[in-house]
Image: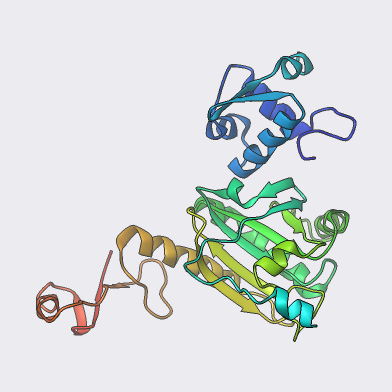
Length: 73
Length: 216
């Protein structure tokens, strides 16, 4: 897991992505730019965050789930 | 041996879509499609903690900033575990101060190695040879290089190929032997007699109608 540690907490790159999602729905390209991460890392990270229930996908854009928003409060 | 021969029956070729994969890497689980829109250099090495591979990983890390300027990502691979890759990368950084900035596939089940024809049983049945697959933003294989276990790769040539492919795509030209950025490029040969006659009047530097060069 690149975005979530075995203890369930987001890694540094996972936190960067979650913070980038705070302002609303964004494309992977926008998240990569805002988080300063390579696009391939963001695409795989979004899969991981979605599977963990921390991010949600709407069409080609991603946002925070309630669980994700709670985690980075 | 027969089983391996059967598994390597299909070797990817230039111009074909790169075989899709989902693999465990040092940067998490990655799919080929995660790299869509970027150029990708997928390369294999025989094993972690070996001398030639270590020099190559340092060299790939050193050209990483130049590759990034050209929109190219790097992805390494060997038939080793993620723990081994992590330990090796940390060791390289500790001993040489070079941080390996790109992901490395841990291809323990050889799924990716076999899909890309990276196992050459005549060299080794368990290790990958030194392959380089240059994959374009549409995920088409554009270049394949194979080096034997004993010969480390040439980073200048890898950068030169990237420059040549990107120049070719942008300008619909070809690049001659030993071409370097800034050198003259080859104009595609004419397809008809009329075009051949016209070609010589177009102001290119022509040796003959089929070999004309121009400055970009």
